[in-house]
Amino acid sequence: MNKIYKYPNPKINPKYLFVFIITFFIGCRNEENNYNLKDLELEFGVKASVSRIDDNSIFFENVEYGEKSRNKLDIHIPDLVSPKGLLIFFHGGAFVEGDKSDIFEEYLSNIFLKFVNEGIIIVSANYSFLDSYGSKGVLTSLEDGKNVVSFLEQNRNLLNLNDKDIILSGVSAGAGISLWNGLRDNKFESISGILAIEAQSSYNVYTWEKVFKGFNIDEMRKLYSELDEIYLNLYKGKPDGKLLEMLDYSSMIDKMDPPFYISNRAGKDLINSNNEIDFDVLYHSFLHADYLRKKAIDANLKFSGVYQETPENFVLRMLGIK
Image (cartoon, rainbow, N blue to C red):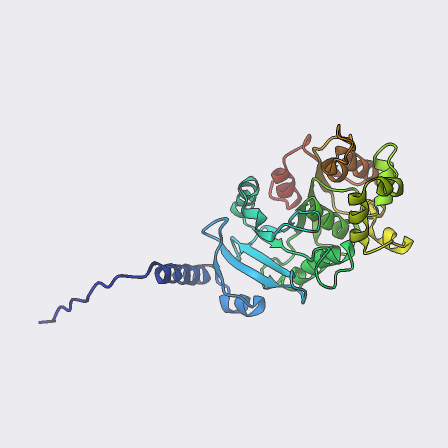
């Protein structure tokens, strides 16, 4: 007769139990989805865990895409067998604050959950701030965005994207990073749409004189020291014509560019009742959106916005899901 052994029931540390659950979960996903998790972990240089957006998704946190201190991104993968596409998100914060973890904020998490549920890979990226070591100003932040796209393009096969498309998206400064990379020189053919929320129309601020009636940037800098400080920090000094031309994505719009969605809610009165600059208006006025829409109309480029559809529907439509 077989003996029945009774084992003690030791108290399990919740920390180790959680690690076990993650490991078991990922192992099951690995077998079910028929991909090599070790290859992903080796390439990204981090261990996989469970996403905070959706506990059915695999999450790679703080993947390095470059050598600078803020060159890190997070990848949320709901389905590696047949992903429907990839969305890159750049956070806002005037190039001086913000973080890739902003997608977990309540006002954004519901939107990203819808994308994950549709099988879209989500990437949220940090980028250099204006005061980051070695920064050349806003151009460095924009080029970091370019490097994010290049990094993901290089790992297209590993992510099973094949010929699937990419959506660039962001809020405020992040919207500008998306527009600059999506509209300049048609560099990335895989980009099928740009989702820009509270965007600026250009990072050549002299073009803002065409956006706001009676606005003169150099005269305003003399009157408002804070604006002058922002200007000099944006360009790391006085910009030359070549740099301003490079930063003006509104002048790069042509009919071969991907369609964009833009939604700006701020008003048009730059100076408030206290005779101070309203920076929300300066950065996020609907006049910026109107300016870009006019440029798109002149170039015969398609665009969308809140009066046509929701941001979610735009993304799904650009990826051919709806």
